[in-house]
Length: 466
Ligand code: ATP
Image (cartoon, rainbow, N blue to C red):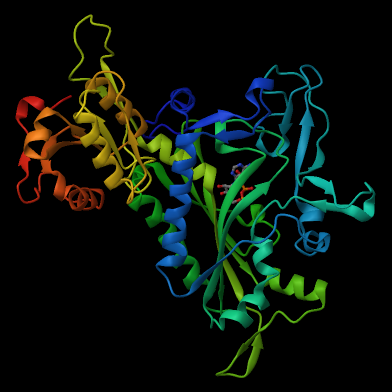
């Protein structure tokens, strides 16, 4: 990390919050866990779905030039021969002769083991694709691989999509899906795992327009993270030097995020040229060209690829949302924490959009609270919480990033109004139940919290800060 690096959160705090609140658990934990595999819990799965949904919305739903796909994980082995993966999807591996730790040679600074200063073995190439067998016999003829990227499923379907959608250049095909890499060095929580998800767009363009489109996607992708709340000072672009470019790439720029362990890749944007379609056309013997009506030419489009990791995005959103501040409601010596932990997720990413909190478990309060809950859950993922004091319930919701708490109290039985509390400012307004859905819709879309619906009012100042 460099000296001007802005402050960031400690990874241990993120890991501990994720476990405590049910975002992410180690895989197979009761058996001691499985190295670098993770399970998303009840809140994590909501956050992850929301990240994927935000990507799908911006890459497909809001555009006319991109379509989606969901291709299979197991593919014909020839795919990986043509793509170059069989030959070059390797990392240089070294072992320490003393402590037997394994390292990626290209990530080491000196020629000794970073852990014990011991002597290292010569580096050897290690293949990162997971191999398995198809059919009943475990022999060479049955070897298949778990895909190490989602992109190839798109390239081999280029003609299928072209024929069925009649898209004209430039156009894109996008998909989200699981990928597998037998990584040598893992760790840093969900940053580098052996099973993860990618969100990839393959954008096909006319050769000659590729540089322009590269710039376009670079900016569009940066913008996506910023709109979802990532701080600008936590994002950087890193241009790959010529000698580090992958075999298929004419240009690559990484979007790096300031993770707790330092600046690291969040997403890569590559200009793959015509490498993939040319290779697959050659290897399969099928025509993968595009017929341009105006010029009557058959051309092989160039591909611009923004390739993002779902799990790395989730980690970046978790780190950027994490905040601690002095707790204004903390009493002196009454066992209350004096720090408020608040996950300031963008509302579209928050696992729950609102929590419904009855002030007490007594009837007829509960009946009213349940009817408010039933009405609103048709629109959003919500939670209902009636355990412990309302102050503690607010803290719980703050810690999982719920943007709004809706409290139903005894006065609600008389005036048909409820209190809506804002996670970030802890301000409160009073809203008629009949206006609640409209009000929450507006607030979730970013309306100023103090814009009131008809009949609404700003709750007393004294209520602020709980
Ligand atoms: P790295 O240099 O960190 O190994 P990469 O350059 O090999 O990453 P790409 O092949 O460009 O990664 O994959 C695209 C995206 O997929 C990455 O930007 C990252 O978000 C995600 N990704 C890649 N490998 C992993 C992994 N092992 N665990 C989680 N996400 C990953």
